Length: 193
Image (cartoon, rainbow, N blue to C red; front, side, top):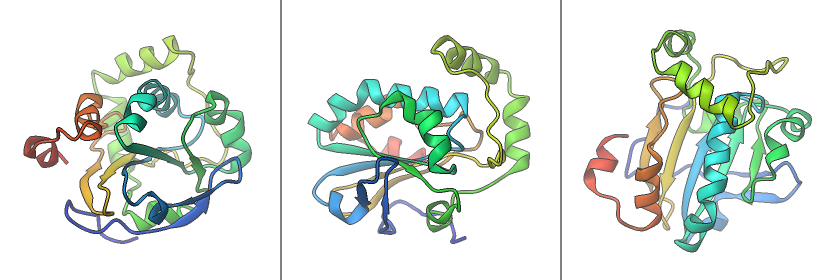
């Protein structure tokens, strides 16, 4: 695994396919902003809630010149059963061997998972997920210790934000992503990464 990425670094390029078999090459997104999100596994209720939130915002983000690529450490069969059922309008990538996770320095941490489980706000996130129809579902063979990360990459392939979650639930604020999509980011957004 490489070291974590920092803002102003060039985003590592990759070529893969999404769960529908369509090619996904980061290089092909040049000229547009990209939100590259690394999730845990395809049955993760909190990850599914986050994808659901992205789906709601995606039409606006796309009009503003930002695309989304969502990566899960799950095999395609599981992706189709769980997160794939949401019919996201952006690529969902199965990365069961964690090749892209390693490329972007996305960590596995039992300590951070335990800290999430004992965090007072975690129950609120779980309740939101359940209310949205995403129950707590185990996924056989999944990496339960994976910690999500999100990267905002500019039109030239440069990392603007490298957000490695401190807890499973510690994602970039949706309002901050909205500002990046609209071209209104400021240094305080970038400093939070």
